[in-house]
Image 1 (cartoon, rainbow, N blue to C red):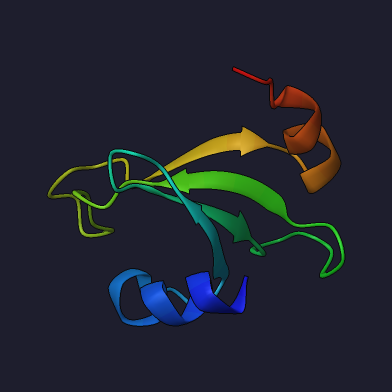
Image 2 (image 1 turned 60 degrees about the horizontal axis):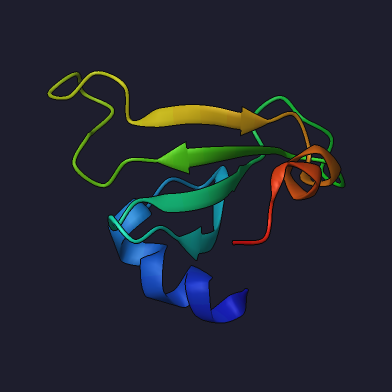
Length: 77
């Protein structure tokens, strides 16, 4: 996880996010700590082609309320 953080530290640059994975399209799965318990953050998808200033208005999409819920969603291909 530290590798993902270091890779995206400059790119994502939003203190409440902790990058944990990248999709095949270059978007980033993040732990979103805003308004959540420090030990149980939400999981979201951050879109690399969007920004928080409205150019592409939705830079973040909610995936799961917590890590346990996110892991339950994963399937094997």
